[in-house]
Image: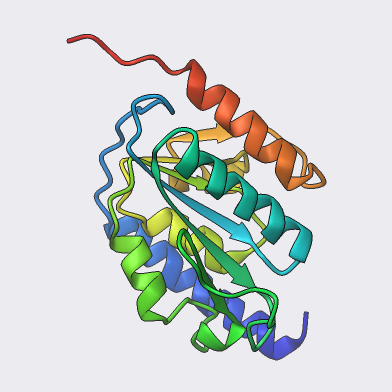
Length: 185
């Protein structure tokens, strides 16, 4: 990482910590069966991951009749021609990041403000913009991969290695979310 990018990342991390500390998130445990709306965060730089998430979004919309929106980060300055926003799929790129590497795009801000029943961050945790979005999301139940440094970002964390393919991450996450049964008051 270049010195400039390292400084930008440190400034972004400071802003991130400040935002997380002032946030008042009240966690609600919601299982897959009870969720009406689901938000997904993922790194869409690899076209295979994009295709996997696109197929999953189509399945969840069609088969399970849930509202779903996937927000993909493409680690390039411009959106590739093969990847374009469509129903259930939105994107942002490096060009949408401010100096501190914080997303500065109205689409991302709307995603953060949307109160999904479940928010799933499929990324291994090494993508600061996706972690930033997950931590500040207004979602009722936030799910991500386990990372001891970021336990405050999620309500449920799943221990998977960074090398786990995105298809397996989706399957494991859905498996555990299906195990959550509604609480009877």
